[in-house]
Length: 452
Ligand code: GAP
Image (cartoon, rainbow, N blue to C red; front, side, top):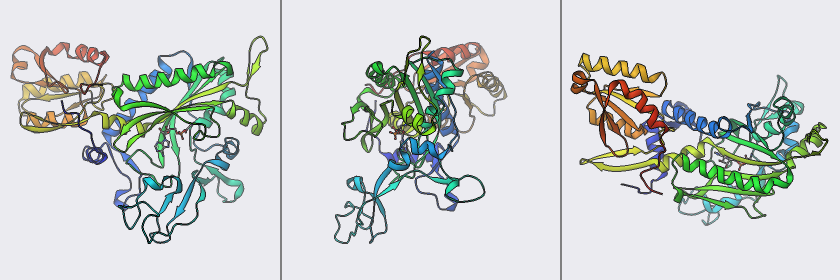
């Protein structure tokens, strides 16, 4: 089994070739590090969101869903500390006119001498660092003045905190309980890059778990484990995942403890997801700024401000990790194939239906009716275009776990071949049993054949 290390260029090229993700606004020359998702990219995203939603909400009794607005009252971002402190240090190079993050110069390339870092080349002329706020500003209403200034949210979390009281009352919850949401966030990153890893517009999946203060440490550890197990459940290799605890100097202003779940991306070990113990910072600040008390009052009168444990990740970082982990190139029968060994519940297409001979009415009829039957419950694709080997390869490349082929034998005995993407094993099944077989196969535990 080929388990070579994949480069980011290979992932970018496959994503583009197969229409998962491509540079946005391309007909206008592109807008640096902004991407659009094509058909398979949307299916992949939807599946990842669905798996997260299942694990966070549908399989539990203690977490509810929320979908808050992108543009919130500007005071929200004063209370959260973002107006004052959501900044990165920025330097300009007067020579090459590029901008860099002053704290990440060793990860950046000089504009004139890409083999050197900014500041290392004799002609580099860097300004003093100045703080640059990463929030995108906008205005609300027709008049542009300071009173109409608002921000595109840089995280979904604050929409959850400001709804704490609503959920407490309407969903009748008591700590420990959580509120989860998926939605776009925006950050005017100084140096976006590495494909989807750092972008200015991304989709966050965040959950704020409100707990009695004395239980915070226990729940913090619990959520780190839960989230690592979620990645293992959906096929990431254990050897490519690790947990790194932040030192006190690295933590955000709100954090009493933060751990990054890191993945071994082609750029090295980097943050996939963060799990933080935010203490009572957010509820206390919003109480102070809004004058609405955000606390829990128990039936016997006990009252406290819950602590918050937050697992936060973006779909973009998960997509890159999953594509990198799944990607393989190997020789099969003297021909090269590129295969995405994605978890079957994540793969954009669950099964392909392939009539062996596209002009054979009998085969086409049976293939179409199988396709019509399966598409009601699953993401399936009908493909009668080209030689069967090429059709298998097209499906391998987008990670389709199974292909059902309708051939001459199907016409004789109503059986079909199912081909497994990973093992390439083929077996015959009764046509009438395909739907149940597929339901079962999707429920089976799946481990990547690439090992741990
Ligand atoms: N509410 C806490 C919070 O937003 P964060 O560490 O700034 O914390 C959480 O972001 C997660 O969002 C990160 O672990 C990462 O998965 C993702 N993320 C942050 N900035 C990103 C960017 N520019 N592009 C893609 N994903 C990003």
